[in-house]
Length: 93
Image (tube, rainbow, N blue to C red; front, side, top):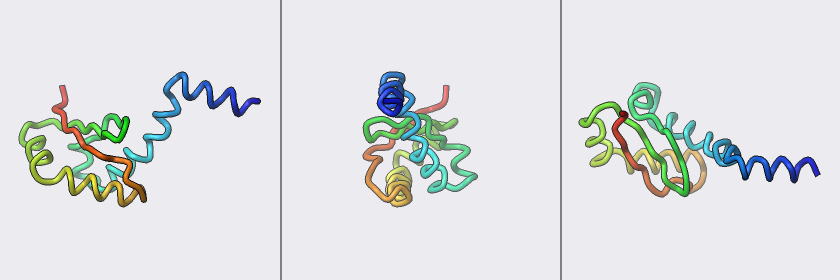
C-alpha cells in the first residue's frame, strides 16, 4: 500500500522523472570531463532529449557542429543504453 502511494506521488508530482534523469546528468558530466562539463551543463532531460546550456555562442556552435553527437554516444555508452536520442544546445540567459 505504501509503495503504491509513493509511486503515485512521484508520478503526480513529477519528482519521479527528475530522480530518473539524475543518472543522465551524471553520465553527461562524466562523458565531457570536469573542465568541459562546467561549460556545457545539462539542465533537463525528457523524452530522450537532453538540453545542455552553454555560456557562449562560440561554444554552442562548436557543440552543435562537431562534438555534441560524440558526447551523446559516449553518455549513452556510460548509461549502458540509448536513452539520449537528441542533444539540444541553448545559450544561458
